[in-house]
Length: 413
Image (cartoon, rainbow, N blue to C red; front, side, top):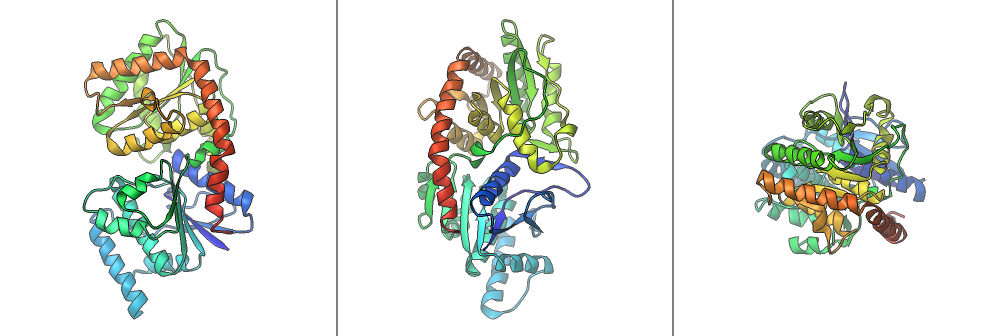
């Protein structure tokens, strides 16, 4: 049997680009296939080959326009109907190679790493074209580890019918979300993010001497100043009575764009911290290669912390699954949807105690007070928090992991 993993993964030519969360989902899915179905022949679409140490064939993603997404999707769909019904080919050679690759597969598995939301329209319509092409070719389609929505009104008439085509969909929140959109035909399930079960990979790091706080934040445009100021001033206040040390946990690691590199963005905090706060140096050059293990290394580094502060969804997942309490910032509906639903698996009734919604705290003083209060509470209750997370993770490992594995592979076996 041949299974193609579809995710927004891969590197860049002549440079480094690594998205920890997307690669982690892909990597854990790969590990599960290797564990349960080692005889399945795996391939993956990638932006650029970067998984040469894995037993997988990498295929280049087809080009997809960076604008006029809906118009170009309709044009491609009409070309697809022409090819299917009239045997007339109007596709480019790159698109034909893409379609031929789909023809060779038995199952197309969307395994996370790229979310189906109007916020990322290029990926949304590339995924939609892939689903409808695979369906016309008679392939089985499963989607796992997904965040689906929110959608702009103009996208709904095109996207919702297509999302009713897969056999199965697993989302990282209660499955009732799908029925509200009108996604009713596939078998659906809600499960924790698959990277909860990714085994971490130990690396050398300075021994912890004080309360270690991991930070994983990224460029958030109009929210940057209030985000940076709230974190810096809160930790400066805490450092007056507690000895703390900071470990930056980058999520996008790249040398092709300073704007995208998390380490460069987070370094803005250094000039705002008072001298009492120690910054743990992290030599990324020594942990980057092989890239296929980098996500597991970042997860290990997360596990050395007592508390994490993040905007990044997968930092929150890494933190909670390693029994480390986390405070997460959100902005607007998409980020709130992802991060709040991650928290609900651990704190179904009190998840709001771990959220700072920047779009609801637009004033600097309000955001600072909220952030400071949550940090102090998590520090004071740290041991109890860790025990709670450990208890929940044991339950998740006994139930959710088994259920998710069965859900994934029963269709492929």
